[in-house]
Image: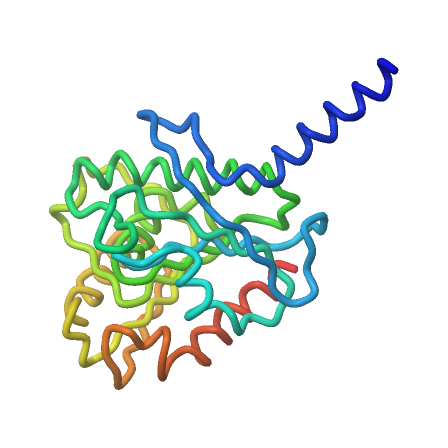
Length: 235
């Protein structure tokens, strides 16, 4: 009877470990809710490359997956973090230097803990759109060694978002931005690229003939293909 009870307890702990929808215990009491999806023929018990995805401000992880990432066909574990701030019908990411420092470190710690929690091949790939794209750029210069590749889309970065000048780079960056973006100007993305290049980050900047929502529209096939190519390298 004791053996049966022990097995039940262990099964419950295993279920909690692999399905717990939040990660906590990060610096400054930061925590994040998240959801997990699988692409290709990948399954929950498989050792897979991880794609960590950050939605845009006002969006949700579920909606971001359904509209931006549902066409990924290579095997991967897709972990979508929820922004830490309430915004409209969804959540948002930081907008000032202090909160970027706090939550930026939290995102990098979450990436490392999630990669340890799930059977993960190499370092995670990071994708961020709009407000999440700003965080992706920030990760590239402050916590780049936590990732293999980073994809900022329709984001920006400026010097005033750094509360200190200690940088930690490492991941290669492929950024996308619409020439006709009326929400975050492509000049904001170009400024981000200059900051990355000044700090030794390998970055390629792709401008396209579209607006802010290109990741969901005209650029979806190209961005999907670019992410798949990097995930295949990690497999």
